[in-house]
Image 1 (tube, one colour):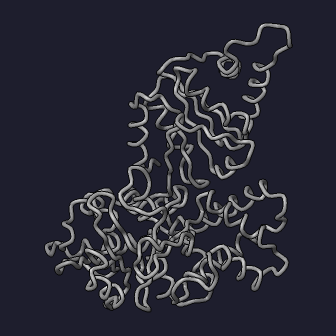
Image 2 (tube, one colour):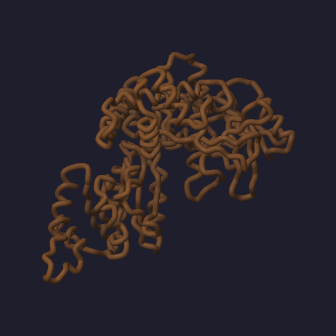
Image 3 (spheres, helix red, strand yellow):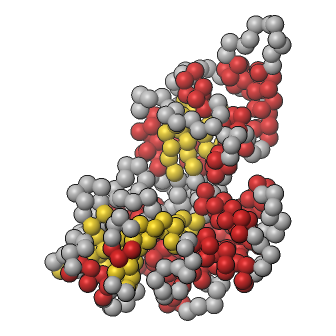
Length: 454
């Protein structure tokens, strides 16, 4: 089953770029990196060489690499040892622009990662490297190859990608609906889109999970696949830790994130989300867990693409920005799985899932080419209240207050800030609406957010 991904178009741009850089595809485990790079290579190059440093092919390539690097002092040094390494691994190798070499899970070898500059500059062939745990490259033995890498990040499927796989005709209708006004001629379409959005929030966008749902149309069967993916990630992560012997530390962090998100309060008791999580984990689960260990686990989850951080703007003062004041999951299905296990109401879970969905969308808009400012999505406080998100555009410097609402309530704090001239517009995102506009206030169905241009 082929799930169409938007990143494919970005990869085509990389191939046509004259800079001849190495393409680095990062993203969470099971987000679809290996599949999309192989499909792209098969459709756009005549010759493909693939190796995965996580499995046997990687071990075999490393043996070829070590053989090619052999040198006895006093003898002539190998002129092109990297070419020889590839040729030993694949005797039919041709160093030309119609050849692409894929090195999967490159974080498994600092020796190979540190050669990226030479891959870029010494070969006519193109290189694509991928990694699920590229947080490892922050360790001292890895050298940053600035200027020689084009970085792209693959996420789990967006709502649009999910909708296209679920119902291509409905997705095309979604793309053509007017914004922000509603199309009153087809009210049933909005109901179908809302149902599809609810399904997406429950199962998320991991390709294997989506495929399981499309095959069986059963949310529980899809969630079985999701649980398997979570377990694989947890088990693989333990390989990289020397001081964590209990895999439950990650699960404890996930549940603590849910409890923080479900609190109706302004910010955190502690100065950062890491400190708040460490306090909750040690209080509720493991009192002997050190702050250093907890922070390292949180950092690992972040760099592995499992969680993301949200900043805080104090009293709508854009220069008073505090990074890392909230934490969200990077896949709606993972968020739903853990939120449903902390013993709260269905309404609270749905409200938090909606906020999590909006967070992911805003984070994507900060990837290159950036649409919005700040180093991470941000919420704000103002005159004793809180605003769900604040957005400022790169072009035009327009400011939006974003409120995620499940009912008909109006956001008093955001309205105060709008009236005080702290922003140009207010955007309501709701589940049960068809959209509309009243002066500076926009209203959109949540499932239309991906089409909205700030």
